[in-house]
Amino acid sequence: MNITANKVDNGVNVEALLGARQALTEAPEAARFKWRATCAWVNGTHSRSVVHGFFGLGAEQSHKTEFHYDADHPELFAAEDNGATPVEYVLVALASCLTAGIATVAQHRNIQLRSVKATLEAGMDLQGILGIDSEVRNGFDGIKVVFEVDADATEQEIAALVAQSQRRSAVFDIVTNPTNVAVEVK
Image 1 (tube, rainbow, N blue to C red):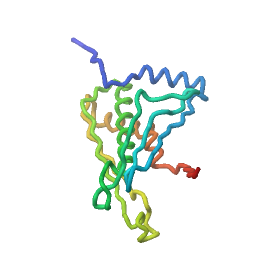
Image 2: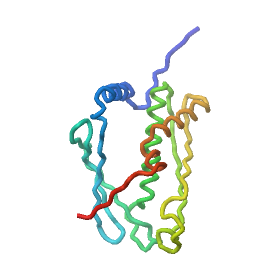
Image 3: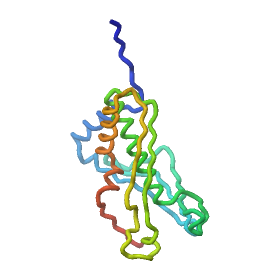
Image 4: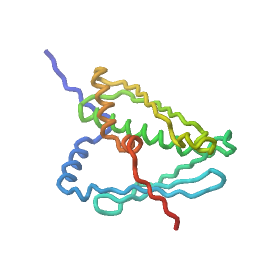
C-alpha cells in the first residue's frame, strides 16, 4: 500500500497564529487592539475613508500601506455613485471575515481548498432611513450568506469549516450582537 501525505497550502500560516494565541494567552494585555478608520466628506453623499494605523500588542502599529475606500450612493438615490454604499461595506466586511476564517480553519484541519465564494444579500426597507415610517428599522432586516466551497473534504467537513469560521468571526459577532457606539462632535 502506498500512502502519501498531501501538503495542504491555503496560504494561511497557522503555526504563526497558534504561536500568537499562545503568546497572548501568557500576556493578555497585549491582546487589546483598537482598530481605526478616518472618513472625510468629498461632496454630496461621496466620502473617502482611510485605514492605516491601529493599536495592538501594547503599541501603535500600521499597515504596510494606507488603504482608501470611497463610499457613495447609486444614481437612483440622486447621488454620483463614486463607490459602494456604506451598507455594502458591511456586507464586504462580513464576507471577508467569514472567508478568511474558512481558509484559516481549513489550513488548521489539513483541508485543501480549491475555491471559496460567498454571496451575501441583505434586505432593507428605505421607509426607515427616509423617515417615511418611524416603525421601520433603518438597517438591514436580515442578511443571507451563501458559501460555495470546493475542497478536499466531505460536505460535513465543509459545513463544520463554515460553522467554526462563523463562531470565530469578529465581524459576524459585531453584526449579530449589540455594540456600544459613542458619537461625539469636536
